[in-house]
Length: 120
Image (cartoon, rainbow, N blue to C red; front, top):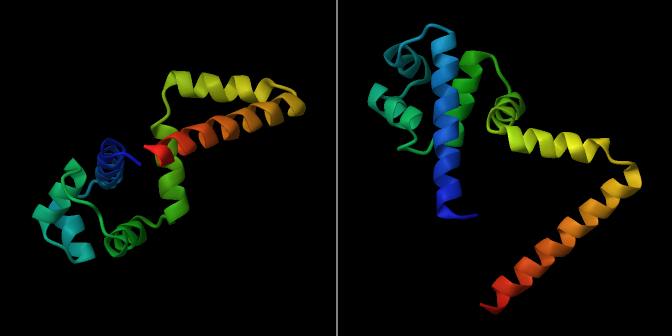
C-alpha cells in the first residue's frame, strides 16, 4: 500500500467521523468528552492529520451505536466514484463464467505486478 493510499484512508476515516458527529448534532468538545480524548486530538483526527487508534474508534462507534463493519461498509460506498460503480454494474451483468474469467485475469495481472516488484 502506498503512502498516499494510507494518507487517503486516514482522511476518509476522519471525514466519516466528522459526518457522524454532525449528524448527531454534537460538537467536537462534546464527543471528545464522551469518549475521553482531547478536543484538539479529535479535531486532528477529523482533518486526517492524526490516525485514529482502534481503541478510540471503538469508543466513537459505541457512542454512535454503530458496528465497525457498518462504519467501513458505509465508507466504502461513499468512496466509490461513478466509474467504479459502472465497472461493478458491468461486471455484475456478465454471465458467471465471464465473471470467473475476469477474476482469473485480475489474479494473473496481480501476480505479474508482484513478480516484477519482487525483482526490483
